[in-house]
Length: 236
Image 1 (cartoon, rainbow, N blue to C red):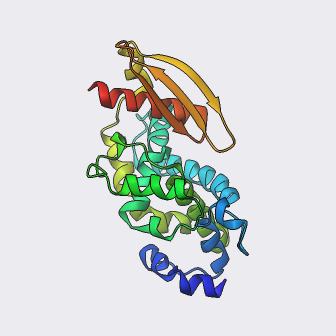
Image 2 (image 1 turned 180 degrees about the horizontal axis):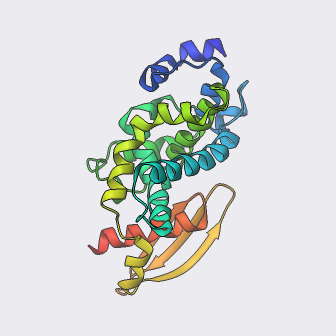
């Protein structure tokens, strides 16, 4: 663990988080993909990502209820959480802080996908791009890693991640985007096919002009939202 920590520059992550892990294994695991864990002493981030997703749900909802007035409906809260939870925002955050360079994997396909996203000149318009799922997964795994390392303290986790999420979260609350699935439906779009493989859900949609678009996400709802957003981006 110590060798991986020093040789692969994990101290840089701690500096950007402004937090030093007591148990470095949590940090390294959060950045280790299953393609790498087969030949490594640490597990992949999959279990951490599962917990991190739930923790992020709770932290975001709590933040909204504590900081915004009661006129915000449960529907608005759900839309805000969904907007933040999609691959676009979380992946963009990871790349904007250059944390994607620390992800550990053995996959040419993943490498090409990440590089294609990072090299895109429109990366700052994150909602217009299909973001590699691994980026959002790592961000959520990192949340769980901090949670475990900080003795299960949700308050401490939020203190660490708020600088990364705060601006996007506040913007989505004050100026909410209309749910892409609603906009897609209003424009006459149709859901053609939905299916799930071992790693993600995929949704195929069609616009009235006959053009097809594909979306991906960790579940069917997020995949559908991504597909609708892809279609709307091209339509607009």
